Image (cartoon, rainbow, N blue to C red):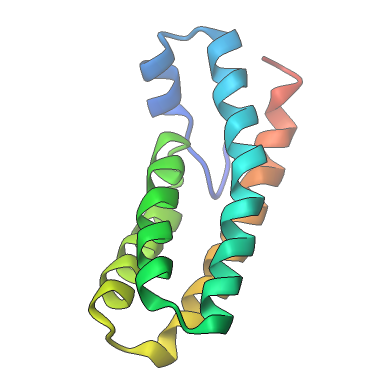
Length: 116
């Protein structure tokens, strides 16, 4: 099965192909991401760039585990500009794009969790 937003090769390698562990990691991802997104939107609304940058860093690790490399790249860029207080006018675009990608990645993961 091919996906646009995720690539489970790293997760398979990290888990040694243990389907139970893979399912647990996917469950953690799908349960944590909505909270990350809610907080990103809150930090965006309050103008807390420092907190936004720190959260982008934390969320980046989750994206990398699921092989969501485009999301991880966007999070890395958001992390950098938010921590440095640069290009504040771009934060909203990044958060919206990351939200869309994370939401679609969760949909892709839900398609395979029944097969694990």
